[in-house]
Image (tube, rainbow, N blue to C red; front, side, top):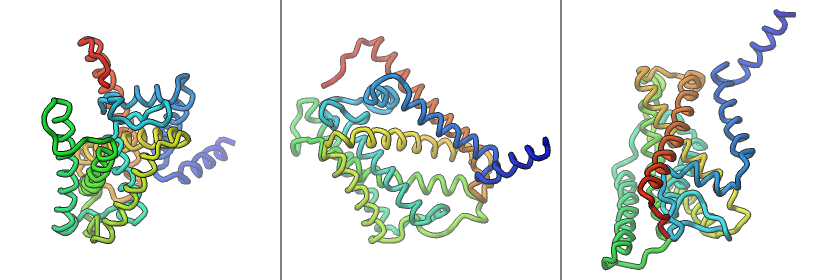
Length: 277
C-alpha cells in the first residue's frame, strides 16, 4: 500500500515540469487567484490596494469603466499592458531562449518608443505645474505612449532574463525581434489592448484589472528570477530547472508589492496627503 502510494505520488510529480517545485509554484499561483477572488472587498478596492505602491493612481489620469477605474493610471496601464502583450507574443513565437539583440534600426525604434513616452510625460507634467505645453495632454495619449514604452520594456526584460537564466550551452543566438514585420505584429497586439482598454466598456473592467495585476506580478517575478539565477551562475537548461527559483521569485514579487504599497500608504497617512484629482 505504501509503495503504491509512493508510486502514485511520483507519477503526479513527474506529470508537472519541475516535480515538487513545479507543484509548489502552481499551488502558489492557484492560492493567489483564490485569495483575490474570495477577499471580501470589491475588485476595484482590492486591485487599487495591491498596485498602490507602483502607481500614483490619480483619478483624473485614470481610465474609467462607468463608476470603476483601473488600478493603474492611463500611462502605467499602457506600460504594463504593452509589456504583457509583448511577453505573450514572444512566448507564442517560440523565443524562449532567444538572447540576441535586434538589429540596430529596431533598437533605435524601441528607444524612440521610450522617448515618446518621456516627451508625453514631460508635457503632462508641464500642465500640472502650470507651464506652457506643446499640446493638450490626454489619457488616450498617455495610454498609447505607455503601450509603446511597454513594448520596449517587454523586449528588454526578455533579453535580460534570457541572458541571466539560461546556460550558454542552450542559450539561442536568435534575435528576440527578427525584423520590422515582427515588431509590427507585436505593436498590433499592443494597439489592440489599448483600444479595448480605451473603450471603457464596463464588462471589461474585471478581466482588464486581473490582467494588469498579472502583468505587474510577472514583471517583478522576471526581475527577481534573473537576480536569483545570476546568483546561481546561469546554469539552467530546461524549464524544470527554474521551478525552485520561480517559487522564490514569485514570493519576492509579492513582498515587493506588499512592501511598496504599505510604504506608500504609511507615507501618505503620515504626510496627510490628499488624493490628487
